Image 1: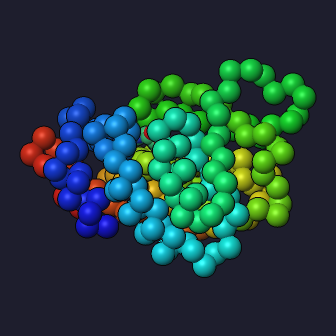
Image 2: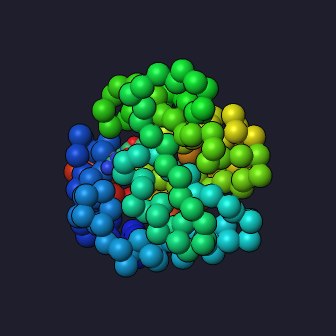
Length: 190
Ligand code: 5GP
């Protein structure tokens, strides 16, 4: 998506010797709602015919874009919470996720009452890197018996393995900007 690529070139900040892209001025801290609306429309163009009933993302950075995507589809957004309490009464689905940005493992959970076999789910996230966040969400959808339609990603770092691994596993992954390479000298899109 040209609009997003142009914005990344203009305002993205490359960190950690080219492994991390900061987009705090329009997506991850301050949010450009007009840009998010355009991304939402693009996801609707790609997945609008799929009978989606729910958008699923992970807290915290995916929630903003997921809300706007959900509005484009006219369905609720559900976000997996990073859980601090043990699942003792069996009322939640849980999965283990390794955080790319923090280097630690954490558990995410979704209440069973909000995801059922009648749902058709689109995963939405801001970034795709190694794919751990999406794998955790996929695991939760599978536990619920809902249909997993695909994943809509704003920025895929295609030089990391997540996108390829998930596509090979059969998931439809649509990324609006795919970065082939990144260094202090600049960004190359796929
Ligand atoms: P993955 O699980 O695919 O390795 O990483 C996905 C998650 O890590 C995203 O939800 C995002 O929050 C974070 N992330 C991964 N790479 C980047 C990056 O380069 N920049 C930012 N801002 N977040 C990232």
